[in-house]
Amino acid sequence: MLRVQKPQSPNVADLTDCIYVNTQILPENYAALRSGFAGYPSNPRWTVAKYQAWKFGRQLRDAYTKGHMTVRSTDSMLVPIQEGDSLDDKPPSKTLWKIPQIRLIGYQTV
Image: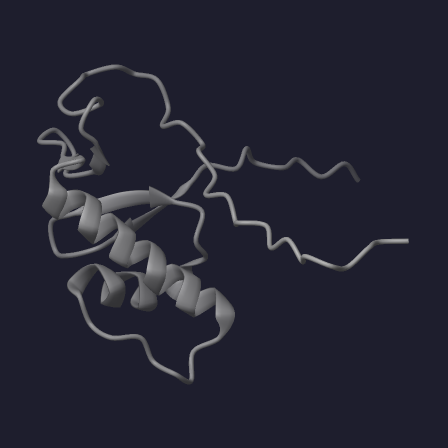
């Protein structure tokens, strides 16, 4: 039997009661994402994925407080300021956060 796969769409996470965000973070890490957005400290017992979700929530909060992001009035989504209140029907862009590469000095790869 042929399996039909649904197209993957970004998950919508609720940061507060009235602010939502499109994210690729798994639903089991939404609590850490909300914790970071609310400004709570990280939990030392969290896994790496939960810590990264918390850190992403902090980055969203910082961008929101600095005015780089805004809450769209039509659907209460947190979006970059240039997307603001535009009524485009295009899907949200899939920007990936890049992980910095660590470069070891003095080591050679074989």
